[in-house]
Amino acid sequence: MSPAKLPIEDYLVIAYLLKKAGLDGIVLTPLQINKLVYICHGWVLAKLNCPLIDNSSGQIQAWKYGPVVHRVYVLLKDFGSQEVTYDSFCERLERFLIGEESADNYISGKLEDLASKEPSVFKLIDMVWYVYKGLSGGQLITITHKHGTPWYQKVKRNVFGQVVHAIPIPDQIISDYYKNELRELPDFANAQHGRKH
Image 1 (tube, rainbow, N blue to C red):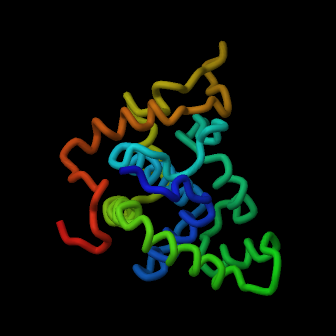
Image 2 (cartoon, rainbow, N blue to C red; image 1 turned 90 degrees about the horizontal axis):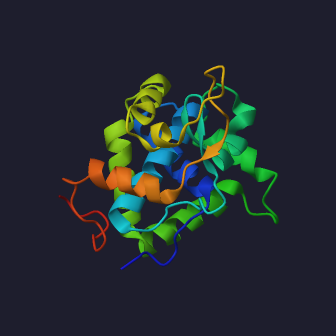
Image 3 (cartoon, rainbow, N blue to C red; image 1 turned 90 degrees about the vertical axis):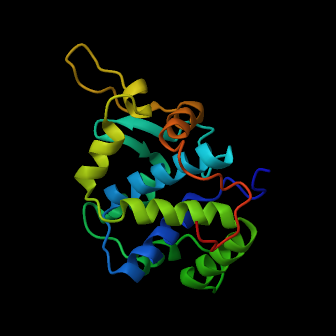
């Protein structure tokens, strides 16, 4: 059965990853966050047969250094290559929220609600975090850039050999790739949140 609340907003996936990073004492750059959101999307597509984030308008794209989730790039571009924390991300979002509720309270409430309704999704994101949390931006680029990946399948080069910017990467290609990559991973479609495997 497909989760009823997917896809979810990109900023909530970012916030969840930043919360995990804070708890583990790890700092992330925008590049690392972008790659992690992309990988989370791939795992959810592969294991739950539905998108984590909305890619219907082609927001996941092949750029020079691998796949980029365009909306995540836009949300984080003001940070440049600087580290992003959960608190600094909440400050960035404050300007977009209407009303008196703080970004932290708003995001925490949304994440709590989603985690209770979609435990299998958050179990997969937790697993992505566990597997990839120690990798640098360069290492994540290498992983998502290698031969056979969705980026590799869709990237195009001009007559000068330069990568053509922002070629959309459709969910079907991402799903097929991660289904093959994650063949040994248990099926989480009916998983219970917090269940040990």
